[in-house]
Length: 165
Image (cartoon, rainbow, N blue to C red; front, side, top):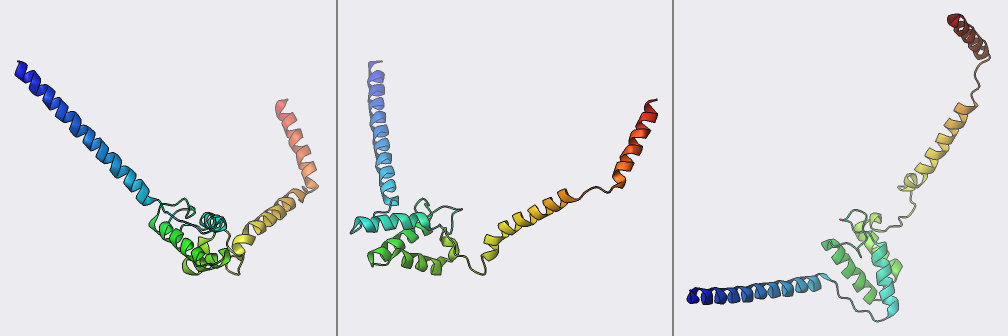
């Protein structure tokens, strides 16, 4: 009996050590993967850092649904952040970086698309819809019932009075 209890205690001790080792190993792997997923960028000046943060917030991830590249975890967003960083390190201005990204990914990549002949209807469409709707509503309200309507209403009242009697 004493031998079984000693074996059980030894087994429990080995089990605890193995479980602790597994948990420690998982913790190391988890922290490594978190650090590997983060982009590490160093800037020469605080102004460069501010430009980087502003640009990554202004540029849209082409893969994600309405998410900027600063918040996106898609691979293309990682690539775009690295490209923004490299262009800023080369001394490019914010406008040049935006122009580069637009030429590569199209106007969709920028949250402030330009007004062009192709996008004019996107800007003017809602305004035109509101104006046309107002015109229709005003015209419908301004239509006056014909004068016969008063006579028809009087006849209807008479018919109701007769039915009640």
